[in-house]
Length: 99
Image 1 (cartoon, rainbow, N blue to C red):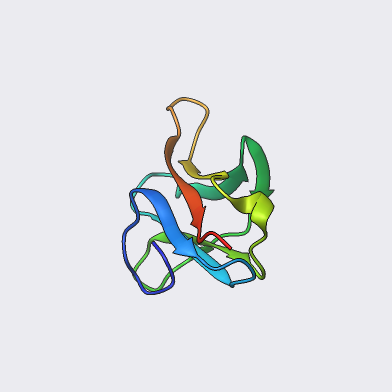
Image 2: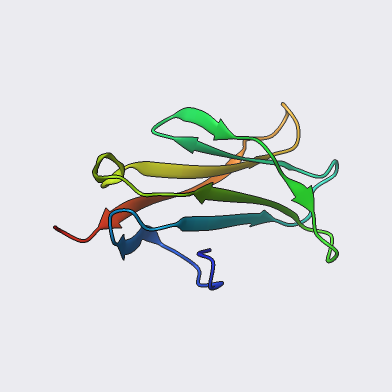
C-alpha cells in the first residue's frame, strides 16, 4: 500500500524526483507470525517490522528522497514464517515523472 492506504499493483507512482515515498506491506495470519521484509532488485533493504493492534505484521519502507536511479526499480515485500513453507511476496516498480 502507499501512504494513503491504496493497494498497489505492479506500479507505484508516478512520483516526482526528490519526493518522499512510504510503502506499507502487511501480512495476516500464520503460526508463527510472519517476518515481513523489503528488498530492492533482490537485495534486502529493510527487515524492521512490527505487530499491529489488529494482529497483522507490518513493515513500512521509507525512501526520504527519490532519485532518478530509482526509476523502474523493483521493490519486493516478502512475508515468511518458517523454512517449511514458501514465502509470499508482492512487488512494485517505482515510476517517476520525466523531468
